[in-house]
Length: 370
Image (cartoon, helix red, strand yellow):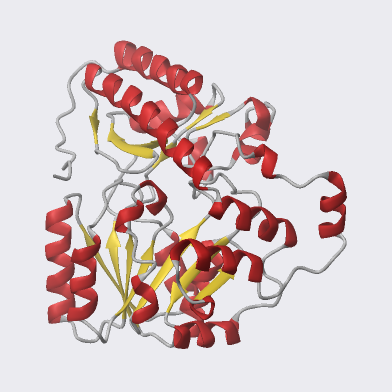
């Protein structure tokens, strides 16, 4: 059977899906991309006069306003911050800027790490896999210890798609133990557990680059804004390879204000905490095997997961089928945390599906992290 969802490599393809199922993008419910659905940042959007001014001028090539906001919030030097057209651009920029031959990736994780390595023709890409956090850390240390040729390692923290987080002290020990390996730590979801961020420590290490995104927590997927923090020597090297004007004016205006708005950040955390509690309660009632998550998404296992994904898609509900995550298959599904009415609708459809189609208990151990 040819599934519609396999036409898309990532979540969030609402415009293409809308065409396929003859619906308006506004009528779809997107659980496939883990973007903040709470639209209470609206009053930060500039008025028409300010917007006209921004659209008529070249953006600041240094993105100084955003960098100053990051510097103020985290108390780190301006010269250690580099902005980009989303953190994805910066990840590719790092791969382009360094002449690495050997990179390690801890899987399952964001598929663009591997794709980026292939795009820039890194000859040896080693992948370790584990669905258990403790076991994964052991495999990571073992591989770094025995393979002295590894030059960089990708770590998504909190991890996408499992939702676990590695304590910062554990990562710092590894960074210090293997000074010849550059640790590329993607903190796209770290705003949900800010105490575990390495953003302040990154300025002091020559083998650490931390990527941050305003897409997930702040819901700014459409304007494309991310930044990285690293030692000033690393940042200077990267700037040589970055295209000019990569961050547009509207992104700079909004990003600088969102980053500094502590009140709205706390409101966001409170709303997500409430909705996560609601979802987890029903997961347990339905006896659903899911991974505990610190972020705004959940990975779970469901027999006939491909059919369930297709069933929802045709109803205008998008979830992320993890068929193309290394080591996973069509029965691993990821959903984001959304507003109550949307979460309720998903749970109703899940309950209906389980009642009609799921005739026996799952037999696969999904390896919940401890």
